[in-house]
Structure formats: C-alpha cells, structure tokens
Image (cartoon, rainbow, N blue to C red; front, side, top):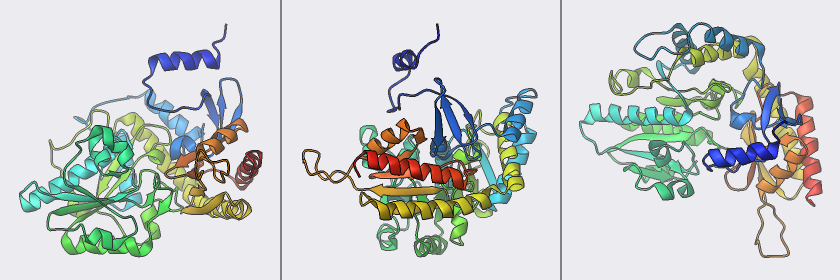
Length: 413
C-alpha cells in the first residue's frame, strides 16, 4: 500500500525537530521551473528553494557533471588537493575579481569565515582583541552564533544570548547612523547588498559608496553578503557590480551550488596576505570534489547559456509586471528589488480584532497561491518575495502574475 502524504507528514513530525513551519505538501521531483509533489500535482516555483535553484530543476549538464564525479571520488578532505576545487576556485575568483576563496558547506559558514577574516586582519594589524563590527537593522546573515550576532533582528537572537561582543547595528542606507558607531576599534562593516529578510531592500548607490570610502579611510574591511543576491540573481553576477564598488570580503552560497550544499567566502589581495593562515580555519567537507564539480559546471553553464543576461532581462520584465499589480491592488503598497529578486509589500492587518481589516498577512496569500499551484516566499515585514529560477520565461512570469491576481481576487481584494 502506498504511503499517503498525511502518513508521511506524521512520520516527519515524529522524527524531525520542529524548527520549520512547513506547507503540507511533499515535493518529489522537478523539471525546469516546475516541481511536483508525491501526488503528481504541478507547482510553478517562484521561490527556487529560497533563491537556490538558479538553473531550475534537472539541468542536464549540471546533473551529468555531478553523476560523473560520483563515479570518480566524493571526498578527499583538505589534506590533499582535488581538481574540481581548484577549477571552481579559479572560476569564482575570476567572476568576483577577488584574490582567494574558501569553500564552505553553507552561507552561514561563509559568514563565520568572513568574520574570522576581519577579526584576524585587525588583530595582526593592532595586536589586541578589542575590535568591533558594524552590522545593520533588518539584516539576516544566518543562524550560527557568529552569523546570528550580526543579524539585525532581535526575534532571531533573543533566546540565544549572549552573542558575540562588539557588534553594533546601524540603519540600512543611512550613512550618518554608521558614522555615529565608528570608533578606532571598528574592524569591519557587514551588509547585504540587497537585504533579503529586510523586505528585498537594495542598498542605495550613494550609501554603498560612502561605506566603501569610510572603509578605505580608516582601514576597515567591507564585507558584502551576496549569499542570496549574488550569482546572477540581481541581473549582474554579483549585485555590487551595479554600484561600481568592490568589497574586501564577500560571501556566496545558494545559487553557487544550485541545490548542491556549498558556500564560499572570498577576499581581496590585501586581506589574503594579512588574515587567515594555516591552522586558523578549516572545514572537513568544504571544497570537496563532488560539490566543486557542481560549482565548476554551474559557472560554465552561466557563460554558455547567458544566464546572467537572461536574468537581467527577465528581472526587468518581472519588475514591470509587479508594478502593474501594485497599481491594480490597493492592498499592495510598493515593489522593490533588483533583477529576479523582487519584493512586494502588502498592507498588513491594522488590528486583528477589528472587523474593519483592510490588510492581510502575506502567509495567507502564500497559502492560497499554493492551492493554485504557485510557490511564493515571504520576506521581512509583510512582503512577498519573488525569487524564481534564473531560467524563468516571460510566459511563466505572466502565468505567475495571473495566478497571483486570481489569488488576491479570491481573498476579496
């Protein structure tokens, strides 16, 4: 007898720690920009596994590269070199124009490495441990202790205090708030080039240039978190390219592996020559040949298929269509974002006890869209997040917009 969705979810709830509020579907396979549950229902995926599956599902070249590597060797440890890691590192350095990279297993581990780089750089320069880091309200950098310490959302932090010392929070896109926190012991400024959990909020060009200038002036390291907004999602390989600056340290993950668990942090020549040394950092699985064979294939696919250029064109089209929805529905208050990382803010309920509610929780919209075979994400505040595979087409964007329009009408708007 075939196990039903209800039975499997019951088994999951018995065996898996309850740290996620999951939708009650079980996804089994994917094809292109669609995924399918175990009952065969089709869903148009505008979340891409939280901005991970940049190439969608079942890309033949990526799958073949992974299958080929499985038959060679899966793991060596970092006591030895392996060719896929060497090739993947060169491709990531070339794409980012940074000097060196370190492969991790996830985005949050990449943040940990970036923070250690900054602290070690400052320690070697000043020979003391009093250094502090400036982060931003509304940010999200991960859930390990270091990454959580620079995440500007107290709801994620409260139960896990005390966190790292020496972290202060400025207002995103407000240079003066940063200057008020600067002191002689500031060693790094860390920010997302496009805030994700902060409601898909891009940095302002003037603000980023001011951050770069402050870092140059005081020998502070600028860390840009491009875990979600990097790897073509903004319409450039890295979102900082829109602004004409470069970080000293950057972090990457999600689209870097397109479903294979991999992250990385990279550093410029200055940091590479004066920070982490042998014995300072490591990772048993980081940079293993299996994941790096995937990373190598992904960079090759991006170049051969013009993925970044396509994402730029489709991102502009998506933004235009979402702007039309914002004009059509008063419940939708604004759109913001870049490329194929867009957010639409939704008017939240004014008072949950009021009979005159004019807003709605985004989770309600996401749940109703799911019934119609559309996967959407939420973001910070009360916003919808749109992060489809970068191979999305105009027809699929149109279908999403039509489905979302239908969903909002059914919810009474």
